[in-house]
Image 1 (spheres, rainbow, N blue to C red):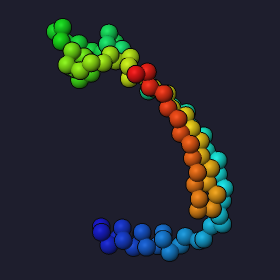
Image 2 (image 1 turned 180 degrees about the vertical axis):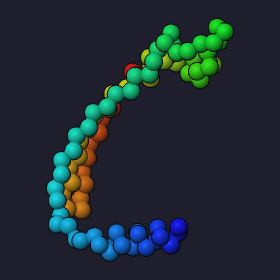
Image 3 (image 1 turned 30 degrees about the horizontal axis):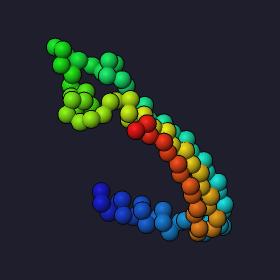
Image 4 (image 1 turned 90 degrees about the horizontal axis):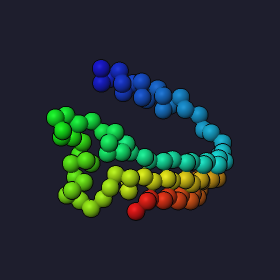
Length: 90
């Protein structure tokens, strides 16, 4: 099995042809919004969720974890430049 994978990897690497330098522009947007405390499962009046169990131990609320991120980047030949920004409620 190992020899087969080695031969296959060598064949893929040796078959690769050089590619001309390409330019690309990328953008991304993301959000993280965990379920609220009342939407998390409970059994026998006690939650099995680590965030709910740590609400009294740590000073945070679940809605403090909401966040948004966005950014973009550009790649020219071997140089990559990017800018990313994010916002967290707390």
